[in-house]
Length: 119
Image (tube, rainbow, N blue to C red; front, side, top):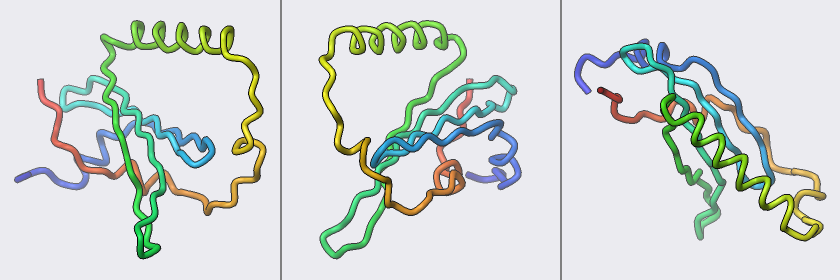
C-alpha cells in the first residue's frame, strides 16, 4: 500500500495476549482503526510440518468489532457452559503431557499485514 508506513502499523497495535493451549497458540490483539475505534483480532496458530521436515504456521484470524462484543461474549459463555454441563469428563492426554515445543514470541504473529480497515 502506498503511503502506509511501518509506524502506522505499530500505532494500531494497542495490547496483545498470547495463550498457549497444547499444540495451538491463541493471540488476542486489541487494535485501532484510523478513527481510533478499538477492535479485537483473535488468531489461532498451529505449527505444521511439511513432508521435507520444514515447518510453517497455519493461522486463522477473526475480527471482532466493539458493537459485537456483548453478543459474542454471551454466545461464547453459553456454549462453554453447555459443554461443561453436558460433556462427560474425559482425561486429555495432551493436556497432561509437558509441552516440549520451543517458546513462541508474540511478535511472530502480531506483525501480520492485512488490508487497512476502513469505514
